[in-house]
Length: 212
Image (cartoon, rainbow, N blue to C red; front, side, top):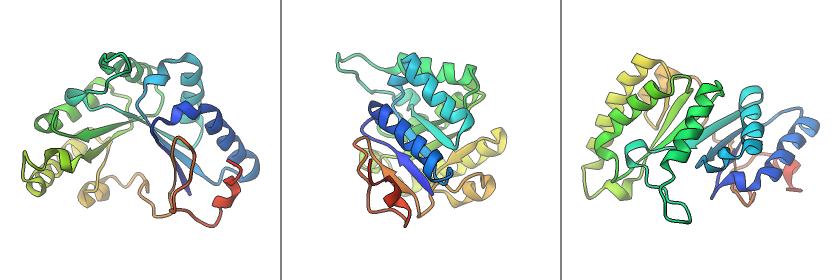
């Protein structure tokens, strides 16, 4: 019963997100909970920040901000690096004690620094709920033996979890067994993109949102 908001960039559709959440409250008795991945840039807008931080703090709403630390290379339209803007959002979320996760993608720009990056994020943003670690396999497959690399990374992440007690969401069953804090990868998840078209993954109640 999770609706996943992703993109593109879901915050470009902030008005539709508000309508869906309101509909869930009024017509579904809050049956659905929400998970959203964002690049974080629009959270520099005070109005959008207030809306999303309120959802994350007082509603069943998981907020995940993409941040690859040493491999951060997201460019804005003018060609400048978005790193400082995203760090300012993470700093504010952490300072305001808003529940949030970081989405960390392992790619050719940071694969040598994964463990140091994860430790840095936990140390820098001490109020963070956890980190989602994903692997861009096609980006690193010519640089490492991917099976060995992922296995070794999981082994090290397991010890990091044991040290910090913060969620590290991966496809590693050993870490999930230790953590056990969520069912984020439920097969009943309903995925919604920034154009709000639903995928084939759905359950019988999804027609409730057909108007959107």
